Length: 110
Image (cartoon, rainbow, N blue to C red; front, top):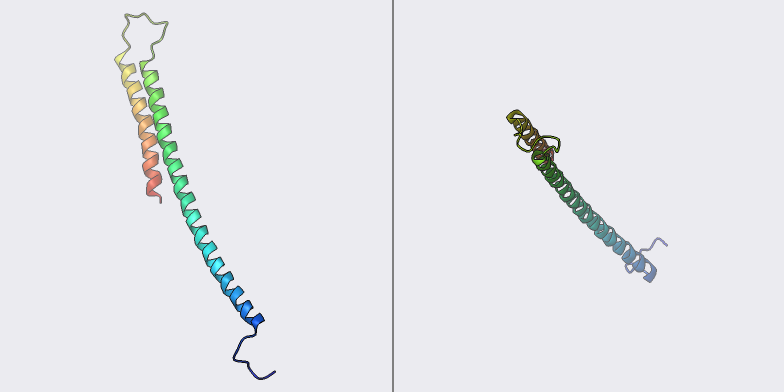
């Protein structure tokens, strides 16, 4: 038993092959996991950007709708106050500024 056989027995040879194959499979799984993680992060980033643009578009539509909305109780010939027009425009500008500022700020944090 103290003699070392220079040749591996078929069982030991098969064992070494299985160990090597297992290491290759482990490395491939690790590589696939990393690729999948990167793809999920990219998809989440795209979804976040779409959400930001959808929110900004909804704000634009709501702002334009409220800006164009005329009260039915007011007479047709009566013009809206220019102060009211300025405040509505400033409110719409502020809404857009918040939406785009939060998007730019979120990208700088990465």
